[in-house]
Length: 84
Length: 231
Image 1: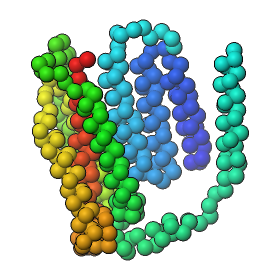
Image 2: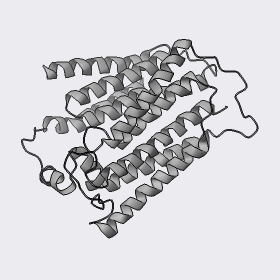
Image 3: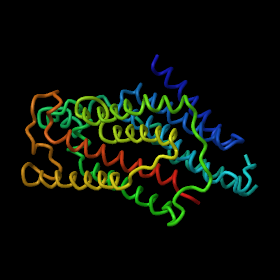
Image 4: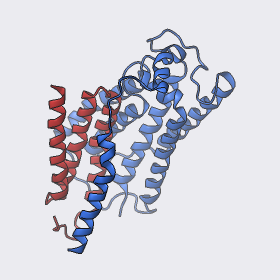
């Protein structure tokens, strides 16, 4: 049961990793990168590592995404972003 | 074309290099000797109900000190790179007011998230979590209020005071361990107390509270300098 959930989560993680690379808009890439961390934290929780899961959820999907968004705000409008 | 081929070649080499590691993996049926010692003696020696915490704060305390130092250097770097220029006190373009829903929600949630962060690092020796996690949760509470009230200023004097004071106190407790207990960062400078109580496990709650405050104020500093920097 748990193995199945972990495999499904891993597949979604790989899919969102590819989405983060190949998405056209930078904003969607940032969100996809955040999704990876969120799913990773769920996997840590299922593997009985709640300490790591908390760190991953708070830093990986929370603060890192916000830092990326601030950076995105800064670089927005400087040069084109059309090489997807 | 040649470039593609080289990339492929490197990938194949990488796979060949890593394949033995994956194929030779064998699930361990018992803990290795060091882990066995931690698990067996940890609760009696250090009195912490959360074994992970007693490993992080005491057995491997020096590594934690290193992590805190790394985070400090990262914060100092961000603050140096994104420092505000003198004269341009506020950003020229006026920021958009955030919505009513966000403002009301923030007013309701910020104190609760703050309290939750404090709970996490105070109970680091009893429940999962600890200084780093609690500090990040506190930083996210302040981030929420920064997002919904962009005009508000953060008092950097207080932030810097909390950060440096908790760092110095952390080191002082570590050095006290040399004189009063077995070694650097030993937690037995305070009485161990009853197993599983809030005031137990010696200096672990104190150290984790200091780490929580330090991590929280450092991350708030990073976020603030990213938001305020005018470039």
